[in-house]
Length: 407
Ligand code: PHE
Image 1 (cartoon, rainbow, N blue to C red):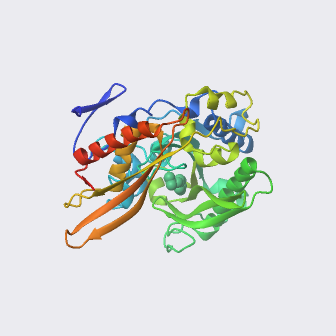
Image 2: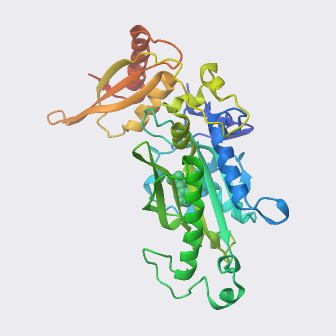
Image 3: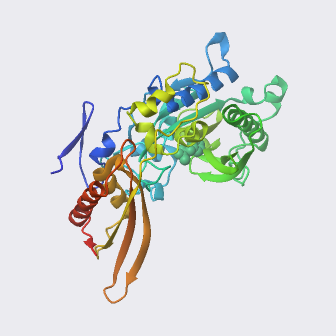
């Protein structure tokens, strides 16, 4: 029986055809792992914060960057998409990708949602840390909730061309410019070069701070609707390239809309779990949510710079069950609906779900999917019977709620 309304804190949200949030996902709101005293995500957050405080001292001893780590994860579609110039038909808005409370509200899919409101408030240099929510596959590195840290730095003409003479001679805006691979139409190439250099220096040093002086770093061209040019940064960790953040020169239109039309700026967003898993050797993303002392005890240190390598308490065995079904003929089925259903019923006992086979039956004119579900408890051995029980419940719920036909 689904309640008519969803209540979060003291606000209620009406359900509508967009609503796809599950009670299981809502349970994660307010856990605030990044604000815990002893938690790997909180340690990493503090290390990055300190990096910015140390490298960007402001006037009169107060740091240049302001930190926002307690903003409401419930945001409007305006904040999450429109304010960031995400086109109305962009794939990232799909119901299959985000957790919507209703047509107008969703759980933020990235910390970029707060860029415009903070710039409008008058902030020029700020960091945002928080939980973000995305519907995704299920495996050791994906979870419907993870944490991001956003950084924004806005500069005036005088900040860009420190030397007073240059600032009067060289413009940062070009009223007749063209958009190219290197720059936006309204920017001058001079300004973009200097801004890009400031961004690269900052993030290269941040990567060195986290992964060590000798870390190999590569900048890969990327696309985001709210930056141009844009890049993703990858670092080499134990022989593998690891994508850790997205960044770029902020779209001028966004700054104009936010009331900062005399400035130009850069922004980045990084995923904390990705990095923390590598730095602390945490093998499974579910562990961050553990309330078990076997996990938490290993992070009971006061200094966030203490090197810690997680030691698996013990690896309990897996139980693997497959589920095969015919999809409903009306085309309404999506894999992410199934993943959420598995999460809702199996909770953290599910380690991984993967689509192992799909085929189209010509005569029946229907699709069949087979998913492999790997069950493994983090704190005890699951018997095959216990796994079978959950598996059965998943079959029943899929038949009832997603109208599939078990084969
Ligand atoms: N919000 C982007 C993401 O979640 C990352 C990003 C932030 C990219 C800021 C550019 C600038 O993937």
